[in-house]
Image (cartoon, rainbow, N blue to C red; front, side, top):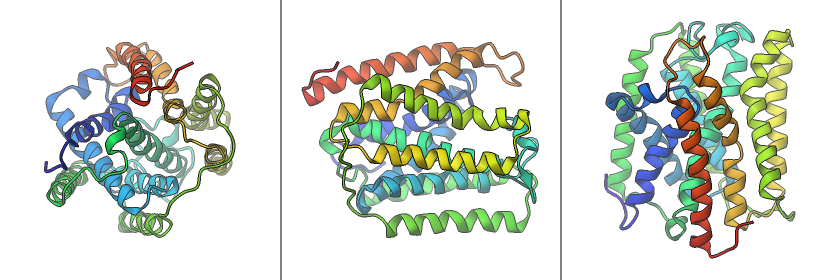
Length: 322
């Protein structure tokens, strides 16, 4: 891939980190599946190239946080709606109770909202911000030359085409047209609002409080709908709460002044602690249809990686870590 000089390390890091968080750490693709050479190649090509393309657009358009999240949402809708079609399936392996809870007009609406937010944050925003933090000298610069952009787009579209024809679930032409139009609309809106974002006035809280708040939100996102479904909570209320809680969390985040790289790191990694905890639970889940062997090691590796990365930031930015 054609990259700008000295930008190969962040490019490679982002190519791997996006699927590592979204698929491996989440246990959607446990180690025996994730590290299968063919699976790894497909996931890196799809997630990694998708994250790279979004990151390049985001940098060129002005680095507004809303732009990044909207582009991530567009990515999530493309993946789950257009390509693998889990938005419309009743047999998708990860659905569980969400295969019928909130299903209307052939659409799993609770799952739609949950997965769109999930991909926007975990598949796109978190990997991009983390890689940029660890490569501060090139944070504000494009990483790909025009040929690199073209190659990343070609790889992404090629794997997308493969996924589209491989995953054949119940859809209608209206479904397909919707998940084509909505991402295009989100991209257009994200570019329209792309401009420099002014930092909030409040000082961010400490690392522990950030971890508690971020992990509480991600736990609500990932298990809240399943609990609500099992308790018989109206699906409309679940959808409303998923959106409102996310918007309140986002508003809370953007009220603070994130001028400190360490504070940004603590904020960005805070939702990952939920996935780390879930990794240990996945290992002992006897009801899983796949083999979750090794997920505990993934959780341990992720926790140590966060700790070591934070220490590396101390050296990069020459500041004390509490």
